[in-house]
Image 1 (cartoon, rainbow, N blue to C red):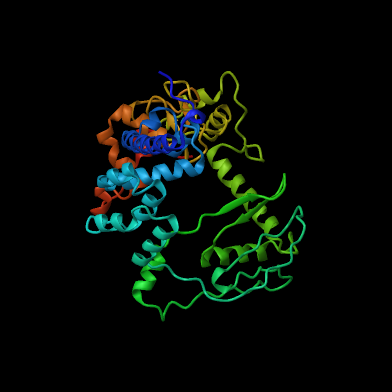
Image 2 (image 1 turned 90 degrees about the horizontal axis):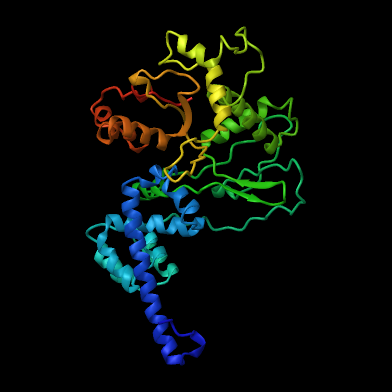
Length: 402
């Protein structure tokens, strides 16, 4: 039996049906979070060929960035506090309010906060959270914004200091511009400093302003600001006006050249004495005949693997989906070096760290690899906490971070 057409329903019946559908939608939403939690804990997204749960939500589930972020955040709060399932199903809480309450929820205050946040708007829940976890208020004042200028190919990027009024750091023709003042924290209470230190850092933003130009907004700490000013001075002969866009571009090019050569993504400018590979001196033969074939990967082999895999993760899931991630790429031995695998082009592939660890788990077991995963990104291992030397997966398991 097909559902009635909404236009044919009486207003009262239509209102009842809307309430029913809203309840069904919330139930489906909670079921989705529970399934997503189990999927995340199994790390099944890695087996499916994706480097992260975020990438899986965007590429496979076709969620937009905001929708994926809210669901992942709510899922992790629900994992910590399973008692929130009921309030989510009956509408007392929604994904946004659960995400806001997450940082301040504890086992002791969970019931009280849920009762106080029930059916509240986002602004009301933000006020409730601020009453528990105070935030530093912005300084009162009025500042004059710079005149709007048309976009130029080499427009300078402003360095803003929120606490100092956000004035633009003008290029200096001689001496470097003075560093922006920072607020004096000596007169603040320890509690206030602790809250300020726990405040999440603002994410950098890159916004398109024309078809070929973007505006970059990023928050720098004191050390990075001083390093940037030092670089502007060092480049004062090459970039006399101190244009920040040109300075950053020069720094980016130098970094790509340096790390690209190390990873094999960029070929060296000067030719070495090593002859180009031939039938007798191919990269595979060079690596196979080297006495350090399982502990050293020749640069020529690294470059060949990088070029073949296109500078992206080459892991392919069971459904034929290739990961293609460019984050934390590593050279992986298909037959592990610890088991005698050679450092040849055919036995090497470029993979992200998540799939490198997955491959190691399949070879050596998840329990054995748990310590290496913690060392790679989730905190110190028990050996490190005890003061011992950290494990070296690159030498033991054949996982190479070029």
